[in-house]
Each structure stands twice: as C-alpha cells, then as structure tokens.
Length: 380
Image 1 (cartoon, helix red, strand yellow):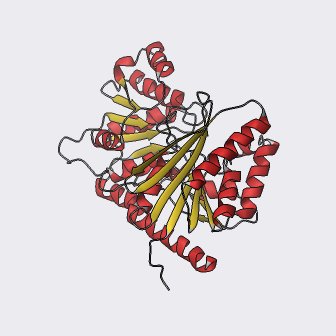
Image 2: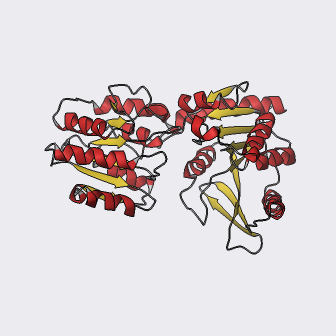
Image 3: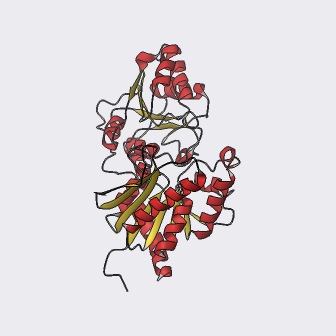
C-alpha cells in the first residue's frame, strides 16, 4: 500500500550553508530542494560557533524545505564539546518529529550524528559521499577518532553512494566489503544552456573554484596562462571566479606581469556563473583532485569545451568534450590554450551539451527515487 502522505526525507550533512559560511555544502541544499518536488523534506544541521555562549536555533522554509540549524558553543574540553554537540542535535531532532528515511552527506565529522538520528527515528540511513579525503595521502593520516567515525557509520548505514566512479574507486580502500552505488551530482539544465553561436571567439577562458592550493592548483593555471602569453598569444583573457580570498593570486599575476590578462570575480550565484559560462569560449580546470567537479557539467551544458586534468568526471575525458591536461604542468595548459586559439581543436556545442544532459535533475531524482523505494519497502 502507498502512504497517504508524502514520504518524509531528512537531510543531514557535515557540510551545509550556515551563518558562518553561506557557500559550504551548497550542493547538499540543492539535493534537498530537488527532493522537495517529490517528498516532504527537512534538514537538520548543527555547528559549533565560537560566538555562542548557549544553544541557538534558527529555522526557515526555503523552496519547500524545512531547515533547522542549531549553533552551539565550542569548548577545548572534548567532553564538554561532545555535550554541546549532543544537546544541539537533541534540540534539532525535537523540531522534526517523524522521518521515513535519512539521506546523509559527507561522513566526517558528523557520522556519529547520522547514527544517533537513525536510532532516534528508527528508519533507514543512506549516506552519500562527496569528500576528497579518501585519496591515499589523506586517508593514511586519519586520526583514531576519524577512523572510528567512519567504521561505526559504515556499520549502521543501509547504503553507501559515491558521487563519481573516480571517488568510488578511492573509497574501496576504506570500505573494502561495502557495496556502493554511483549517484552523480546534478545541474539545472534550464539555467545552464548554450549562448547564441553568433559572436563566438576562441580567446576567452574561464575558471571557477575555491582556489584551494591543496587541490585546485591555481598556480599551475596562472603560470600556464603566463606561458601562453609569453609565446605570443596576447589576445587571450582568463576570468577566475571564486568565493574565497584571491589576494595571493592577484599578487602572482603582478609578479608574472600578466595582471591585465586575468580578471578576478566573485562570489557569484549559479545564475551569474551560468551567464559567465555563456560569455566565455572554454573552461579550464587544473585540480590535482576532485571527487566530481560539477563545474565541468555546467560548462558542458553551456556547450563550451573543457580543458581538465584527469580528476572526478574529467578522468578519461572524451576528446569531443575538450582536452585532457597533465596535472601540475603549466606547459600543458599553455599548449591547450594555444591549440584552441589556433583553431586546431574543433568542438561541437550540441555534442558537448548532450554529455551534460546525463546529469540533469530528472535523471538524478529518478535514480534517487529508485534507491529510496527499495529501502522504504524493506523498512516496512
């Protein structure tokens, strides 16, 4: 029998937009908004805030999603900090009475909260992983607590999802016997669409990221552009969009005397980023690691080719979609830019967009519904 009311999905995550960082985990919020078209959806998120001397709760309704955020004091005393975290979660769960299924994201460091919520609501727990900490050089440095969180969460979750095959492969070292399913992130195909073909050029390049040195490698990007300019390609221009500080990278452009060729913008909304995609001719990604890289899908949907290192969904890039770069190699960036500007690399915007359509909202929610339904059936 079908329930008389929509199923209630609870979203939890180690990362979620909050008053301290409005952008962290914004993809989790997008999952909640996507699901709200089919289900009743609530979000619980707790966070330590050094400005708090007591528990503070805020609630909002956003695009059909009921969001409960609870902020708590931060203590250097581990026992006291654990007390505040537990109290914050209890207060949040008091606001969400009944749940059919928990759809949690990013195990570290909230995995134990996922377990407590599962026990509280007596419902299935599905965990989707997006984080980059499963790569060898990071996972080998896991603390005892982190290993315990991962192990305990793995024993309690009903299904494990990975946002890409690239991440799924890395996760096997941590979850050797756990069956995982690949569920990609999604992009609004009505927001990201190609520009009119009239006025297309081959000299406007775009990069969108946090510019995190540990994984995004902005130095290789900027030095690659500098090399192309030094080789005589002085008609090019690179736009860098970031929601994080850019001062260090502005200084690098000055040191390389290429500041007139690079514009820094941001933060920007998805609508603004989509418009910037349409104003540019190619997208460049120089990351040393990505679990997914949604910006590649956004670029494909706007019909522009991508020059990317072999990370996330950019691994083994189809030549019809762009150029595979060599990681940490500025000359690889320069060569791709030069070949593109010389017209040596023809790309079809329609072919590129068709690849992006595989990551549409409709495709992803249909996959999620299939996953959820088998757990609803089993739970009942």
